[in-house]
Image (cartoon, rainbow, N blue to C red; front, side, top):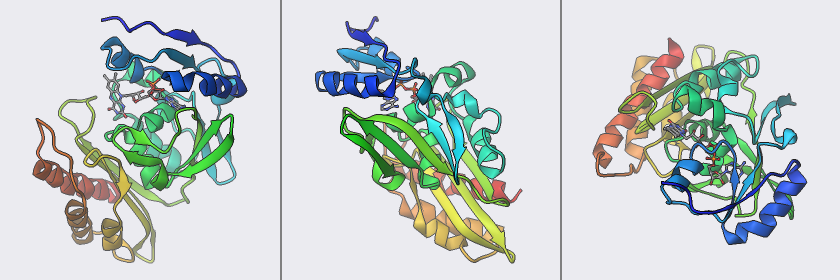
Length: 285
Ligand SMILES: Cc1cc2nc3c(=O)[nH]c(=O)nc-3n(C[C@H](O)[C@H](O)[C@H](O)COP(=O)(O)OP(=O)(O)OC[C@H]3O[C@@H](n4cnc5c(N)ncnc54)[C@H](O)[C@@H]3O)c2cc1C
């Protein structure tokens, strides 16, 4: 099928984007970033936006840079920008390890990091990264700019704290201290499919003990989130098989998994146990 009719806008500055959004968002105007989620839904007429605000011509949104202790990822930065480490140290390696799990190569050359965060699919790898690392989302509109922490940003299946006229201009990820270990594991039925469950774990080792652990689960619940009980199961303890298993058990017990025609909640709960344990094992490999 072909999309329903829409008006196409091609601004070249952030000011033009937010002015256009203020105007057209109430008439179901939408931002077009990589188009890898929006265009298929338009082709199926599941979405019929009357206006598309294409942000691909806005150079100020193409920045990918370190500022202070954060990596700033502009709204037009593609998934593929992370195939090679975008920054030295553990964060660059982590993002390179995760990006390979997103869809297929051609999709990664168009789809954007911020588009994934704004779209907030429960099975988005970047949403799991953002939840685990307590990313900060920079939302801009004609009313000004606000910074939204990840725990307040994700509000359910494809639902975020963004107002309809707000541009997610940038996502900020904290740089990870040297020596930070990480592991990422996801399960999907076929390579490139959306994950049914995934886990990301990071921590440092000090005196043989895991410190500052972060464990997030995605794909299993309406939105990715950190699982405190799992983090507590390894905090201050040896990063070994026994404690990894305890953390995985805590994650499985804590989640309230989604169900669908193909996947029961209990199956997803079992997967959460497995992906959490494997992510932790990978971190120690
Ligand atoms: C076959 C296939 C497989 C896929 N597999 C995966 C996968 O395994 N994992 C995964 O995470 N994704 C997957 N995707 C989705 C892909 O990663 C998309 O690129 C991503 O979800 C959205 O990014 P985009 O830049 O393409 O956004 P678009 O499609 O352009 O936009 C998506 C939505 O977000 C809004 N939006 C986009 N950018 C902004 C912004 N800066 N501010 C405010 N709103 C914004 C749009 O208005 C729209 O509503 C897959 C897609 C396809 C087609």
